[in-house]
Length: 375
Image (tube, rainbow, N blue to C red; front, top):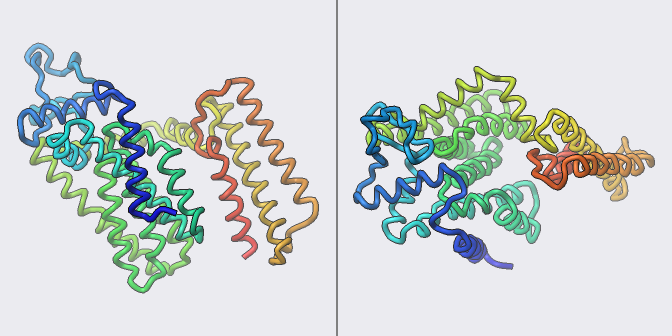
């Protein structure tokens, strides 16, 4: 088994090799193309200034015909096509040394760090040895992080920061020095929020889940929440100061406000999007219902099989009865039938729902719920 350093270098080497299959003149999204164009402009000027400029500004002051999609004309008079400054700065430094392919080391490093965070989470849950390393390789090579590593996105950095924040939270509330993991986790979530706005939502969910599982007192839970907010504010305030100094106005702050306003203005649309990305076998209402039923059947089968396994091992399982095994088979058969319906009606197309695309997730949830009930 490779050591941690060797595994990280091996994963990085795979990313580098895969990146050479892509042309440096094409990108996986319009937003990444704009960021790379910004890197080129800053490299030519020799200073960290993301202003792209616009030669037709006097005839098109709103930038409706700007050649780079999503370019914004800020209140300070600059034309920018960026979503975050911290990742851009690291990319710019590397771009000056080795061009575009060197700048890709930024998202690649984020994906490697996220893979290590996945392994750390598995270790926290009692999974060790080869199984924990399997999680490392699975997340690193068979998840969206492999795609995020191959273009100049900040997604992988945001995922890595949030994942390591959760690792800290899991070791925080019940430990003796519980205050510093909470403070550091808040700082990591804040740093992630300077790149990915949804980090603020994940912070709220992580706090509820982790504090709930730790069974900490209400007083300590409030203290943990306060420390998280303190840690969160530091990178956010520093990032806003950086944006005002470099761009002349806020970038990420405006995106956060816009996202919050959009969520408040269209709650039904947001709830539908959440259902699609969580359950759906396709983007339709029917697909959402089928996906939810699919995940529920798998979780139900997991609960039943966990009781069966525990009973066979001599563990207490008072709720276990012999028909449970048969019900589990029926539940899995029902899940398979729903999947077959999806394939027949829609073909082998994209499955947007997380729990439908990765059935191991509801199965793992079902097993955990069974273990909690038995305990």
